[in-house]
Image 1 (cartoon, rainbow, N blue to C red):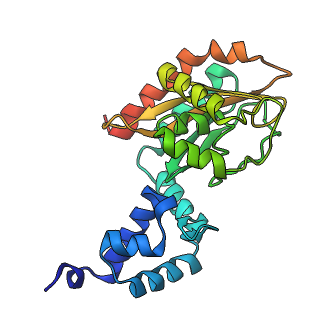
Image 2 (image 1 turned 60 degrees about the horizontal axis):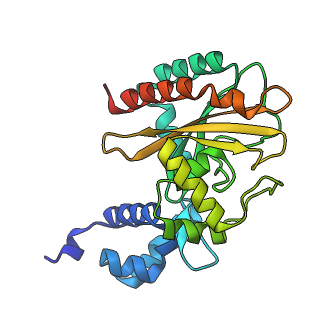
Length: 254
């Protein structure tokens, strides 16, 4: 029996999803068929079914990216994880230490998905991002932090196609300036939003790495400029990084 015949339809669907999450920009039907050795007709049928259920979304370039149903499934898995009580306790403590709302986001393919937050008594009403939403990759602190871990060639592709939901006077619009910003972020291990996403709101983010030293989540906080300045968030970076280390231990099961 050939390897193709050994794979059940369920296995093929899982392989398709894995490939789409890993590299959505290359995930055309033809590429998936060739790279996974699945007949093109079969790929088309499975992609159609996954699209109808909302697990993937077709793009204007003919490729596919993770859909809302897939992101919701990922988020549901986090909400039922054994460490959820501890995770919420860590977020609560961090929020109290910073006196600000704190957030966690996780990567799905080339995007970051907002999946948990702890609100302080100073609500951030300027941002209407909800759990499961994609974060703006080129203007948010977490988005830039995630892009700083990518190959520059891939960053250029993303930068040229992603249109931020809002452009402010502080948004970085030139690719060379943006690449220099990412190099600084990669070196420092921290990122800032200097009112690049939303005017009147600043932010800071630090990475959470897995056992393989790959970014698996971003930990961030935001504040209104009527209450704090960027220097105030810069002074809180050690607190954010200390919390990130505790999250790394939690995710590793230590």
